[in-house]
Image (tube, rainbow, N blue to C red; front, side, top):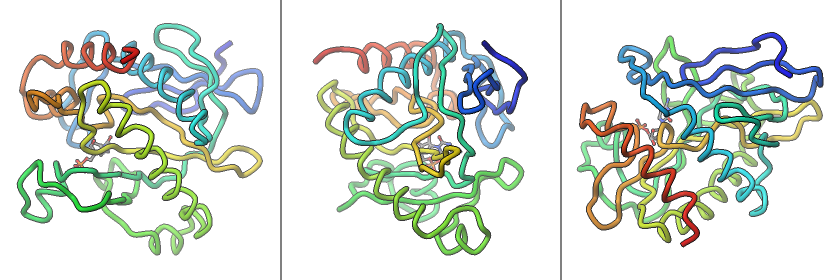
Length: 236
Ligand code: C5P
C-alpha cells in the first residue's frame, strides 16, 4: 500500500500510494517542542493521536467540514486524500493561553469575548512566525478566497468541537489547524486534531490534558493523552 515517502514532519510521515490522489499518513511517537529544540519519545502517542483524529474527522465531515481523512488503516496509519499543504497554520482561541498570553501580557485562562483566529507561517526554521492574511496572499501562499474559506471552516471546527469536548468534561482552550488543496483545488482540513495540537483543560479540576505537560515538564504526558482518547471516544 505505502510507496515512497513524500514528507517527514516532526510527528508524522506521509507516503505516496498507487493512487496519485491518496496518501498514507503514519503517526510517530516523537514529541517535539520549541521548534524541535526539545525532543523525546512519548510511548503510545502515535497510536493515540491517530485514533483521536480518526474519530473526530468523520464527525467534522458530517458537520459540513471537508477533510483529507478517508480511513484508519492500522494503529498508526490512516489513508487520506492527497493534498498540497497550504503553509499557513491556523490557530483558533477560545480562552487566552500560551503565546497569546506571552505576546499580550495576559494571564492564562483569561476569557475572550469572542473566538480569535490567528495565522502563522508554517516554517520550523523561522519558528512559525505570526502573519496576517495580506502576507499570505502577497507571498502567494493562498488566495484571498481560500483564506476566507479557511477562516469560515476553522470557526466551524470550533463550533463543533467546543460543545463536543464540553460534553466530555473538557474545556477546549485553543487549537491549531492545517488546510490543504486537493488536485481539483478544493480546500480541505488536513493534518491532525489531537493533544499535540490543542489545549485541553479538565473542566472540573483545570488539569492540563495536552502537550503542555511535555512542553512545561509537568509529567504524566502518556496518562493525559490516554485520558483524552477515553474522553473523545466516550459516548457521553
Ligand atoms: O503556542 P500557542 O499558544 O501559539 O499555541 C496555540 C495552539 O496551537 C496550542 O493548542 C498549540 O498546541 C497549537 N500549536 C500547534 N503547533 C504549532 C503551534 C501551536 O499545534 N506549531
